[in-house]
Length: 199
Image 1: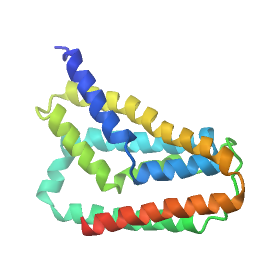
Image 2: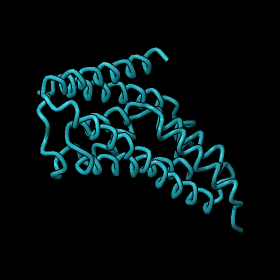
Image 3: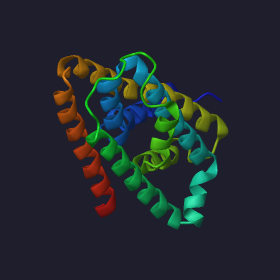
Image 4: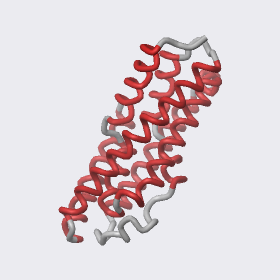
């Protein structure tokens, strides 16, 4: 039986709220857009979207039960997230500020995007909350439909951050300005890491 349109719209609204709001992944995508341009950042966007949706799907199919059975996994994910955020912050902080070959196929890889989501506690929380809200019954059709809707909305949302970065990059131009921008983004990532430690 097909779910009502209102349910699909609600799923899309949840996906939009969770995907478009600022967070560590979007900060990194924004910085990629500034430094490498929009098209070169689409691999990162695709990887982040695919990585998240795979996590969402697996949560829906029962991965969350592992967290219940082994609660220490939550701590491992949290500390992996902190380590990754600090690593990315260091990369941004130490960047030369030289613009990459914009839209020439360079820039962060899809694998980097996917890994960012798997060590991002926000992604785990959004996956668990989303599946709990829309597919708690465990109905396979709902799990797959929610994942498909989420993929489209998430890709568009994260791509907006890459586009915003590419737009900003045209105005920042000089390496000294890019360095300042990257260091501000690095500070935001460090703040995110501190929040994870203290939160």
